[in-house]
Image 1 (spheres, rainbow, N blue to C red):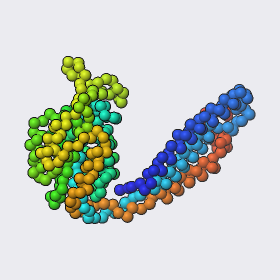
Image 2 (tube, helix red, strand yellow):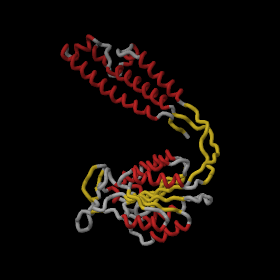
Image 3 (tube, helix red, strand yellow):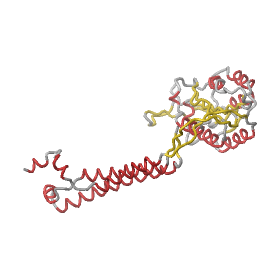
Image 4 (cartoon, one colour):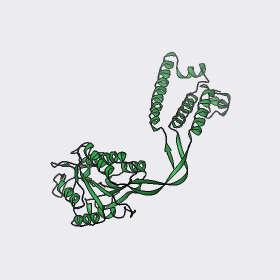
Length: 348
């Protein structure tokens, strides 16, 4: 297991494309200026040792050196052993609707991205609580089993999309059924299920499953995204917009948020419905509810004794910089002897 101590230094990688652009501009300027001075054959005779390859190689060494130095500043750390620790928290499972109706752009940037923002910000507010993520549409899948690794949760969350489920539609029932399997700690008395959806539901069994979860001590909170006026569902091919989803009659489908369904599910399971169109509202409310809940102690394993690894990247970076210093822009004797492109034979 590894972690990055100072990931903010990754922004320094922006230097690399800038240096490449500057190198290409300088190379273009040199070629243009040289052509004004003399023809290409004459230039080769006047400066037989000039080498674009060597200049490019020097740039490559410099860029590799900078890259490894940046990574050394980030300071990757490796966990050397696992240890068992006791922590206090509650179990929180997120059920994210990834049906195609969540791609509607009646709220910016679209319903799905808004839902991801809400989940990510709630996770950032949690302490030692365990979290799990379910994605669902026509059926449901476990995106992340319940864990204390909040960084992993945010990483997996960003990849959630409609293509990850094989069946489209919106079956909250499927997500509720799968959520039952996530709560694996029988001693945990505070269990939360947070459903983020536009509320479209096509299953009659949803209410009964919600009631079963409530009987098991799970509180269900629902967060609705989208507007009552609704919006069309964009259709994309290879990332390019090709139109909007249409029904069998050829009419554009308008998907609307159905808050009533979400309100009913939350009421059955001793929770509450929250409007999610303004990101900060559900984040503050859910963070407050979870923070005030009674915490249970549980054991978990985590990596300990993280050791710095920056020295390896620092050493490699310095090596590349030294190679850049000792490389000359001009052709060296060994390169002329190799004569890869039969330049010397041609001259004779």
